[in-house]
Image (cartoon, rainbow, N blue to C red; front, side, top):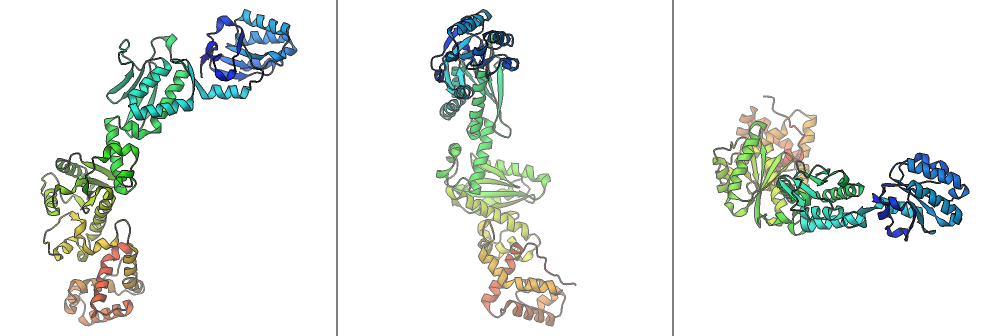
Length: 524
């Protein structure tokens, strides 16, 4: 707080103090309080200080008391407090006369006033020069937050101007929020006290109280109000971000990221700062997740894909999550074959440089489900590269689609892979692999015989012993022996349809359940 002696006398908790000396210096500024309880206390005070004391020690030696008053005056002290009960009328008159001659204000306080309450008040309250009122810092902050939420940065600038009595300006990107609006006498709003407000990765505002001359320079109260305004802005950075173009873009990306990862649970229960974006989300949607095959072309191809999708859906909602770029598109854009062909045929998009996964159509409140489906597609497609048996292309061809998907994959094309779960491996899938594949893994740790590779080739060869032997360059009897070993280890029969089905499924899931296991390979 910074107040004049005249303003300080209006502090409510002082209970009508009396100024008994130094009336001609009521404009002295008080910037801090300092307690004095001995005659040498004057050696340690600073300028613009109010010396707070009951004066009990001064009453013991009036001559020393007058000498202390001279020391305080020389130190630039703004004034001193006393309590009447410690002095005789004669001694108090002597002290009063001395202080008057020095031009040092003396404030007579109520006998029951506690100094600790005075210090607490002085530190927690701010004197608002513009309205000549004392307000607590907490009250000021609460009022500023309410003003920001109802009237924005313009309202905040008006409030700071109202309380300080000085022209105020908030600069954000190319926008100026100033009060008063018609104040053009000095176009440079930033020649006074300024504070920077950061509320985004690339967004910063400047809050300034202007001054015209030295006499009107911002005081400690103005600086306190300015600091509290900064706190108000930074208390809700999402609100401030909505006032800037960069901020809105960042906030929108945060909204999409939270929506897709499930942090913003259901649109109707979303965070208040996201309300402005909720109407942009299609009622029925798909999520497209994109990964780059190599860094060299990924940025450009993602940008071209964004431009393509932006033509189909305006505005286009997107975000980056780890190494993936995700887009939200309306489900009514077309069927999956149309969307796949549109992306693959775009001349500026190299389909070989991107891996694109597309989730199922869902309601807006279930957007995260479509995102994790698209992500699962990418995870599976990444594992497919070296595994012909589990090739996405083979799966689609086997389903009779016949269309080469390239690097554009749809969740609904995954077939039995969808049973694995979208966020983590399903316990049922893990149990299936433990039942049918784990015995083979344990066996291969003790033996060089590649039972798992033999099993893969056997199924890929349509369970033909001769073709399996030719593919592995081994004798047919060896194939028979290995398959008998598999039947014993896995407790199955290749003559049982359900056994072979379960074994094939477990084999397909194996790279995901046991990603660190490297099966043995045929020496030939």
